[in-house]
Amino acid sequence: MAAVRTYHHPDVDEIALPRVLFALSEPLRLTMVRALSERGEVDSLDLGPDLPRSTLTHHTSLLRESGVVFVRAEGRKCMIRLRSEDLDARFPGLVRTILAGYEEAGAAEAEEDAS
Image 1 (cartoon, rainbow, N blue to C red):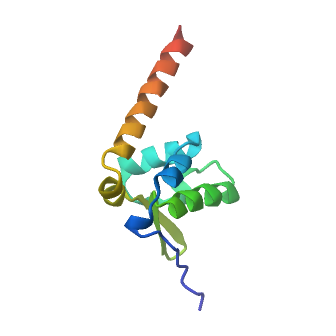
Image 2: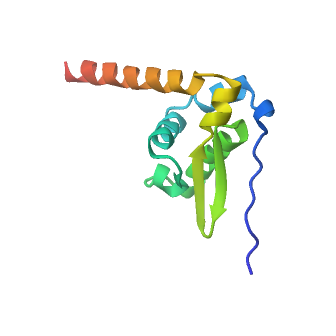
C-alpha cells in the first residue's frame, strides 16, 4: 500500500508578509491564486494543464510554503485551495487588493494592445 502524502503548512502566525509578497510577485503564481480565488479548491493539475509537472510542483510548493495555499492529497490527486481566511486574519484585505490591482493592470495592458 502506498504511503499517504502529507504536506507541511505554516501556522497562521508563521505566515510572513515578505514570503507572501514574494510568492505573489510571479505572474504565473498570481494567475494560479486568482483562479483559486474564483474556483475554490481544485486539482493542482487544473492550475497549469499545459505546464510540465515539475514546474507546477515548484510553483504550488512555493505557494504552500509561504502560507498562501493549502494542499492535501486525495487519492492520486493533489487538491489545492487558497488560504483566504488565514491570509485575511494575518493581513486583512491584502490578497483581494493584490488581485484587484493585477486584474486592473491586465485590463489596461489589453487596452494598450488593442490600440
